[in-house]
Length: 413
Image (cartoon, rainbow, N blue to C red; front, side, top):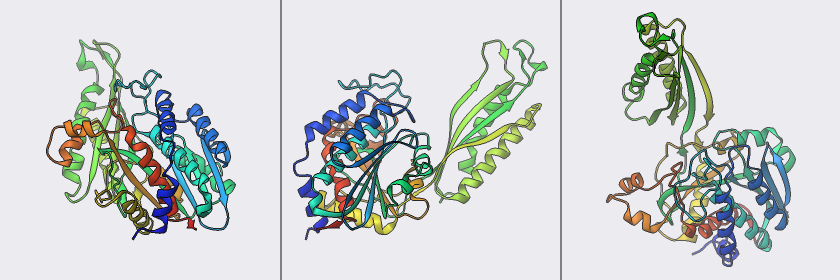
């Protein structure tokens, strides 16, 4: 038997202006903006929210947008979409590809804004079906881990009210039409670490008169690969990636320093602390072994928290999604190693549900090599790929996920 929330969601989204929303998505995709520079995107979202009857504010936390629709007594539900793009040169060949050199919506945030816009408009148009308060948040700077915290620090809840429940979703690779849910840990913590190796520079013809930081950095990169394989228990999940190594200016100059940027992915705080301690110890040891004139500088940078769904909130959303989209569309894939700053909106106390919407076009999925789900997932373009291109067929379902999720908590008439 279909619940009241599911029936209302299907009614409210039966007449979605799909062509208009697809046009919005194409426009956002053509004009990507980097973190804290989402001015055009914010104006677009704010204009649509005002047109739908929301009290709307811009510039929250920098470029954030907040819309509030008060519709009588009832719970307050917050729907969030991130807005920023990535420094990636697009290679999709799409007719609506990015027009900004070196910048691309390679993580689906343009789709997130489109989904949020459609859901806000549908819920506003169907306000006779529910009671409560709807908060709609267009968040900047998710990719840098700054946006959620900046909006909270700028008085998000003091100015617009504290929600009872937070809801968010993310485009993900996988055959379009699936809605993965995890009733607990769904995404990992992420920690950036920067290391500066100090050597003694000189002429390439006289290495004996130098301390070569490039050689030390090379040893350090190799040794760091043993942190996960030899210092973390096999039952734990962790990833250490060296994303950048920089040193030198010319072929025959031994530089005075080398810089390494790495990223840790962890699913518990004890493992994170153990990895950080190992990184510091290995960096110090390699520099000592090389005779570096100074100890290395090890700096912890941006950190994303673990995303841990409230089990009750996630169960409510997963149940209504199962009703709306049918049997087999909702499943538990287990936690992912990706990271989000969405939990910072929860202040450690507000329950939230966060889920995925798979967006790989059917043709691309069918043509991908491999006979199993993991094999195909490894073959299709993923988030942050210059070839990432969500299927337009997911525009309407992604609106429906947010509408049905909101109605699972709002007072439905």
